[in-house]
Length: 305
Image (cartoon, rainbow, N blue to C red; front, side, top):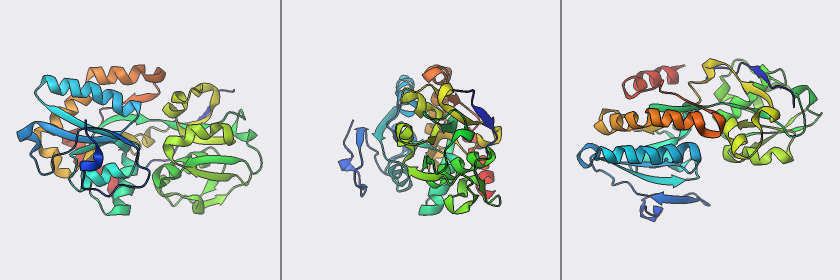
C-alpha cells in the first residue's frame, strides 16, 4: 500500500468489584486487583487506589509502577475494567483515588455530559490515530457509498471527522471544535460515505468489514496489521497532541497529596519511557508534558477554549 498521506488534524483505571457501591452498567467486563477504601487518607495509608483500562498501554506500565511504589513503601491497588464510563464515575464519587484510561478531550466531554469534575493530574502518553484500510490504497480510492467506521464517543468521533475534513474527503462546519463535531456537522460528502459508529476499542476489528476506519495506531498494530501498509492518513499536527494525551486523572484535591507526586515520578520514569519506546515498534509517544505542578493551569486553559 502507498505511503500514508499525513495531514494536520485540528487542535482540540485482587478483588471483585461486587464490593463497590456502584450501579454497574450492563455487560461490564472486568478483572480486579484491589478496591478503594473510600474516605481513607492516601498519604496516611500510603495507598493509592486506581481503576484503569485492561489494555497493554495501561496495564503493563502500571505493573511496573506498582513495583516501583512498593520499593518506596507505597501500595498501588488496581482494578482493571473494559468500560469507559465507570472509571470517571468511580473517581468522581470517591470509590477510587485515580483512573488511567482516557485523553483530555474525552475527559472534558465526560465532565460536560455528566456534571463531574475529574481533572488530569499528569500525562503518560499520546496515542496517534489515523484512517486505515485493508481494501484501498488511498483516500481517493474510497468507493461511492463506502463505509467508514468511526468512534462512537463524541470527542473521538469529532476527531475522526476533522481528520477526514483536513484530508479533503468531506467538509464540516468549521465553526465547531473538532471534539464537538458530529455527523450532523458534515456540510459536504461528495462520495456519500456512510459513517458507522463503533466503540473505540473495537475499531481495528471492523477493518475487514468496512472500506476504512479511523483507529488509534496502536490498536491497528495490536490487531496484527502493518500500520504503514494499511494507513491512508495519519494525524500530524502537534497541536492535536494535548487534547488527545492520555494520563492519570483524579478529583482536583488529589494534586495536593504526596501520593500524586510519588505516582507521577513512577509513571514519568526512564523505565516507563523505555516501555513505550519498545511497545509495538513505538506506536505510542511517551510524554511528560503535564505534571502535577502545571496540570491545573493546563486544564483550566484547555477547558476555557
